Length: 177
Image (cartoon, rainbow, N blue to C red; front, side, top):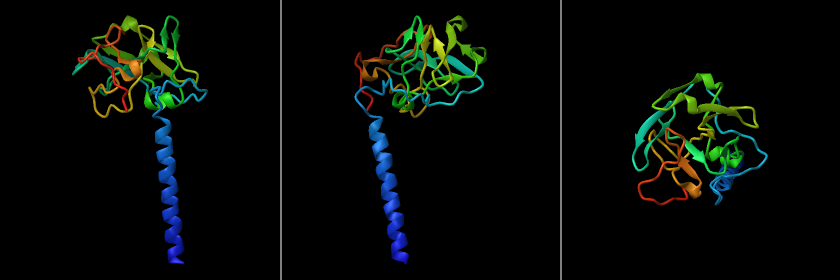
């Protein structure tokens, strides 16, 4: 009886491990997560307030960071005029939206407040925009002021305080995987 429980438990652990591995592989497609699928997960829960801060980050220069000091990115497949969000589903898991409940709750330090706004995502959350472009975090940035998302798939770039693309120090792009 004890051996049967142990085997059942081990089988359960193996099944969970396989499921986690399979899900992890699903988020590593060559598109860098630029999925336009119908899954509308935003990857981040909105907070009541947010702060956008201009900060100096190694390899990319002066870029915008969030309240916790994490670099914020812009995605070339999105548009600024009109503002359009294209990162949903698996993309939003790897690139969570910089979300808030209201543009009035966004404070700025070194960023022109007139450039800051919001856009409603198809899942109903409110995403912060800068110069019309939706902003995102990169899930693989483990600490504040890391910019591992810079240049991923030639489409993801740290946002400067004006909303432009930051240029990396090497002039090259990585695939982020």
